[in-house]
Length: 472
Image (cartoon, rainbow, N blue to C red; front, side, top):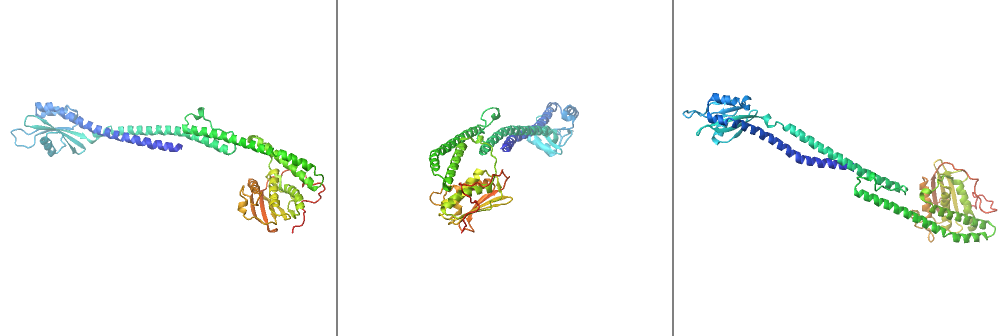
């Protein structure tokens, strides 16, 4: 924008300068020409009284020498022939440059003539010496006299035009700098707001906004209003999320009391563990929703994917045993560090395994395979169900793929986790079980502090998560 304003100023000022200075220069040139001819006419008119008194050549020669043109040899007097003489041409006094035909034409026409001669022009002015005879005064005007001072005038006019253009460029540049500075300030604030800095605002008053166009000031005011509205809406959403999550406390309390009365047993322990975990997740949601974005504590990102998968598969194995599902966990014996928070990865694994239990018939087998490489950790969750009717639809957020009760959010959450960790999520068909297969790929990261080992669920459960009923 700054250079555009400068170019516009240069173009506009140049056109205005040319529109005024070119005619002015031509007028100066014409004035110099008229001045030279006027001076010649004045020199010729100075000899009129002498010709009216006498036509003596010696007297006229002295009169010519007294004039400026005569001293320079630029003037001549063509006298008429004597009255009693039969000659067609009279005597000539001074330096002659015009042709006899031009002298005759001036005498016959009785008016001033300008004829071109070598090196310039001759100004021929008829002067009556008596009632019947006419003399012609010839004044030579050199070519240089016609342009004297014109070059200097053109130079001055050109400098004036250049000065006007430079002044216009400086003014346009200063104006453009203020506009560009204000526009960049607004763009920087927009980028900062898009990056999550909700406190950023654009100054709308003070010295730093002096000279800012009114339109940009209005845009800055509108931006600040928009940013305030965004902060208000985010705060309202956090409050709403916290309030909705808080409403779950009452049914969770009832559920926890009922789970406490179940007594002993693997199913009772698993139920109480699930209720406790659900209560912790709800509390975490409420705390996160109540916390302002800028107040979020720093979290060390990273966990052992193998440990998390062993824990979650161990949790779901209790329900698999109750439903008669054969299952298998393979490849989770060695550490597999990934740059993902432990809770987020656990939620993703729960979403994948939960889909198996929700969208396949009771007794359907499933498997979890973990492969760790130098660059990525790949988790394959397969089952022996019917598979995905439309894998592309299954990955669309909010579009359920498993019939009634499916929101379609689980796989989308897992996909976003994979992309945030530099990986991806892919759907296909299991080669071993023949049903659906979900491949979760996560980029590797620093090895976090390792836990004490796989977490066992249910008192009295002695089976390792890696060993389940044999898959068909």
